[in-house]
Image (cartoon, rainbow, N blue to C red; front, top):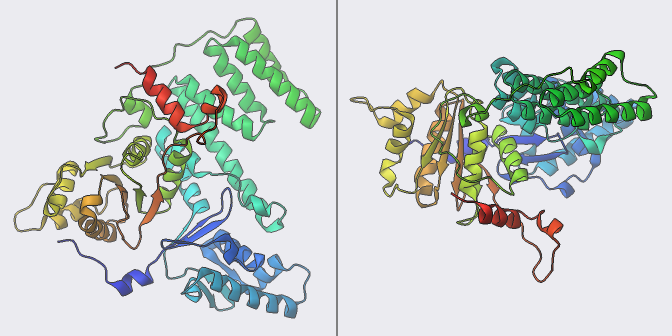
Length: 462
């Protein structure tokens, strides 16, 4: 039997999650805070400032300076008091527990679990740089959902942090391109550099690297066209021309002095990253879920239990498997699929999970305890697929494992949520369809996931 936390313990430990990249949103436990809950704009700004602050703590006087520059101390103090009340109210029941006043400072979530996407992104970038694994770099890149707080574009207090995070994003994209080039995976390297120049069109070094990659990939025309794009953007935006070194590179390419290099043919293991897993090989392409793929990876980085929900046939399993395949190499101790469809006896769940992970029973010790011992210090992602017929049993197992194994992540698929306190659910909608009765053009049909899937499968020949 797996232990389950009591109700009071669950109430005390509801995590707060704050997203700042690409736009502000916040959730407390399973509840998302609606945009219209922020009666005062400054109330949301107060949360943002504390989320960005070291240790999520700022002195009251500093907050007053940032939020009401130029105001008198008495006026700013009164404004802060009203704003703090509005922020706590927006957070709902227990708001005063999440926003705490202590020793002349305000603290965000001093006793409860707090996830902030900027910190998750920075940590993922650090992990990638330590691992030198493309999969870890891709994970970090996926976590950058856009510039920091675009709705606060003209607020002075966010400018430096926004520039630092954007710089880090461009750096890891460039480093990923270097990793791919070292592996002679030129197209993957070029794709990373194309994202760099799309974000920073005047980055001459990225343009030059892309030119060189095109040239050694026997794409001289693309290399010379890239030079022309660089020349045009430098002239228009900076009233400058490419550096002498870049001009010489262009001359070498035009003269055919850069010889093509034969690319490697990557195996599935190399594409996903080196690591242990038991995921099945995909026999067909993955179509129409690009946005969901990125969102699942972002959500999984912000929680330890993510459940993809939806009706049968909505694509939950395929989406989970694609996410898991992309994350091989991110989890040093492996990515493991536990398919629950064949399992009819709830009492065999622990045995099934242990079997997949290669955990053997020990005489005189419960198998669950042995499983915990094996996972306590391991960084693992477990995919629990098709949980709907074993929801209660899976919930108890998930709670017990997550409480005892700090580096464990669980990705579940189910027709209904598991109901675990720390769970985040993400509905998986059906693939997009054209409006009924509307005749769409061929170009318009290409924008619908269902149409693209139909075409892919119609053309597929096993």
